Amino acid sequence: MGSNGIKHVRVDERLIHGQVATMWTNTIKATRIMIVDDAVVKNDMEKIALKTAVPAGVKLSILTVKGAANNINSDKYAGQQVFLIVKSPQALRGLVDAGVELPQINVGNMSTKAGSRQIKKSVSVTDENLEDFDYLSKKGIKITAQMVPSEDAVEFANLLKK
Amino acid sequence: MDYIIAAHGRYAQEVKNSCQMITGQTTNIYAVTFTEEMGVTDVLDAYTAVYSPINETAIIVDIVGGTPCNAAQMFRAKHPEVKVVSGLSLGLIIPLSLGESLEGAMLGAKENIQFVEQKVNKTTVSDDGEEED
Image (cartoon, rainbow over all chains, first blue to last red; front, side, top):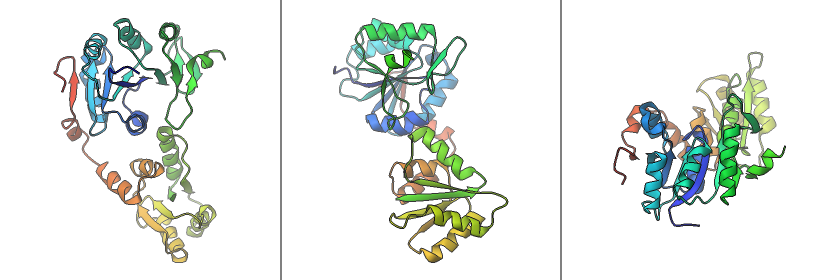
């Protein structure tokens, strides 16, 4: 895959939490966790929680879609092992539209909301989410759903057929 | 290595459940529940029921001097090779379920008791307002 440093991409509304800090970061051997979310960048409280949750020895970036795309596209993370986490596929759509190459997308946790339907334990999607996933899939990006590393990854599209 | 975890009430079972929420299915953790109507010999029997002599085993209890701990001491009289540790917590069980050594996990669990705000300052962070390193 590309040399932009992005090793793993995860959609997880809880961002950095137990499963991510304890399991995924080790499995991926991430050297940097990158949160891409326009709202989080402006939210000091949420940023403090992220700074507390990031595992020791792992660098943390909290970036807007625009800022992340600029940094990634200027090869700032080449040679690193970046674990990119977003709350929803919308941010990923923004990155892809800005020319960022994503290796693959894994869907972890998306909570139940008004108008959403549950497609898997811990994954609920709205019509807007589905449209974004569809857009990303049509760009040729493989999308899977896997909560923890010990669980098997399933094709995201297969969950929608049920 | 196998770990029998035991505590007052359903705490041990729920520590196991909480651990699995993070790590996925565990294979080496056996929870023993100690309820009001049980005596120390009931707890001892519960240890015997889940103990497998083939595997190296430690019993991890909640507090020193409680019935789960006392029963573990009695169990040790028959099985002196079994280690008994107190201070059951999620921070202790997660690394053990992932294969960390008992000594390493105990050290980590002790460090896990901390003032959380002191940790924030040590973290390297960069966002759109700051330079990245």
